[in-house]
Image (cartoon, one colour):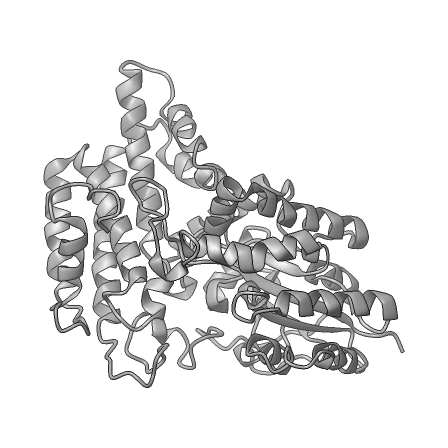
Length: 475
């Protein structure tokens, strides 16, 4: 019997850390001896994997906001991802890389328009970066509902990856399809929960041969396909030395011929007809309560042994959603006359979000020719930055952790403050009114820190209410 194709998938992503005003990451003492956590994780994980040629064999998605940092700060590592995708295309006919929505947001909690924007921007970024169309897309936290899958399918995405509990019945071959109505459907690969858990939490990384033996056993089943999926940072950052373990597994697979390593797109091409499956929705891979971790006090948290509450999650989301409505209205009213085609500008913005120097040129092109060219370009740039920040406000990391005063919440509040700061130059009274309403809403999000009453205090301390941009590093 032919052995099953084995897919090893790494989800590569880091919470954004840049100062919204400078675009630079602040000094992070906890990352010592490195300047910040991106530098540290790159040294522990991304660089060793790239140097070893892991991406030739490892299926992966690379979060656009992380890819942007790598491209600017570690171009050698960024190139390792690109070359790995290219090598896998030569070997398998399909690349190892799959796309990701531009910002790491929980798509089931977004409107359809927000879903479409994030997917479109992510696909545009992928095409610029990898020089081809994406065949698959990883969903942040694998958070899914039917509308999310329909948006993917409408955008031309052929497949995504889910956890076993996200479908009612896991198909025997590990791949199924979800019917979406209107003759539209999308393939879903279901990763092996036991294998993935064993790698993610280290059980298969402790013994020198445990992981390879588990893969050899799994690939001998009477199935065409088996996959495991875990955070890419597992390999060298979460588990020291796991990057070397991964490369030993890959080397043994190649030398022995007992484990055939492929990728999702090549497996789908060879799968033929696959069965229909029923989606469990909304669900994610990291919340036992669906997607409640990102909007309520569901009980999921990083430090359950600490006495803390997460009642702030719902009010924080509500505050940012109300601000988003105001920013959308401002864009709709202010963009005509400054952008000849505001909707088209929003659709194509993803082409340059991952290439920071390109945003000003994009704004100039989007503004078009006309009188007052310099002022018009500056105003167009401000509007596009408002749109970018408005999307980034919903980065999932802010709700994943346990405290409304945490760095991740400050980061999304920073996007909110920067959006308001840019709007202030166009419509100062509107910006002031939106900021006042935001702070009032944030006051409903209680803090755990005894020194802080609520998220309103976090915002005011970090971003100096009404004073414009904070000094670099203040946030």
